[in-house]
Image (cartoon, rainbow, N blue to C red; front, side, top):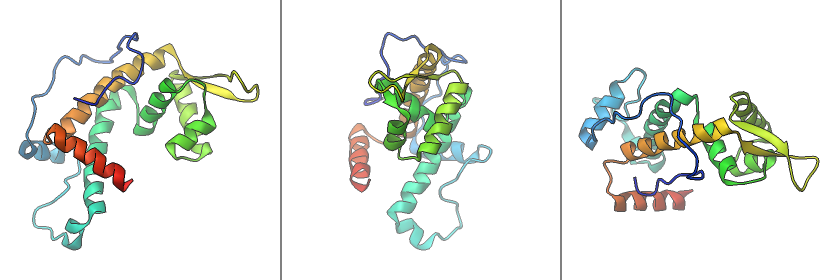
Length: 187
């Protein structure tokens, strides 16, 4: 997908828990919805015979319905690595920002420092992230990806790019750019 570029150095090798050679055929907007909605626990964003009233006219409600569908597919895409959306974001940010400290990660992600501690602790337990003494501050630690973290992130990025392309396949490239621009304005 255009716009989905590697977030880590290209010199790293991929590591995948399963074969990624089989790709599902592209689906149109009409065939995509029933597949996701019928999966166990899948969210159907618009049930027949339900009057949604004013909800159908609310931008926030439409965004939330889309977000639920995107989130469900994202989680399924990264399930083989046990990578959640916050873990993926943290791995990308750590990989792209040398000497990143835990307090910086919390600020960038918009979470409490205590939440960032739990997030980094989980990534450290998974052997994906390590704390190293910060170069310019003896009291602080910088976050770095381990070798396993770099391999896992490379595979996860491939899965996320596949997910993003799959979820946006009903939109043209121009529509995707417009959607990103409009969402940025709302944010």
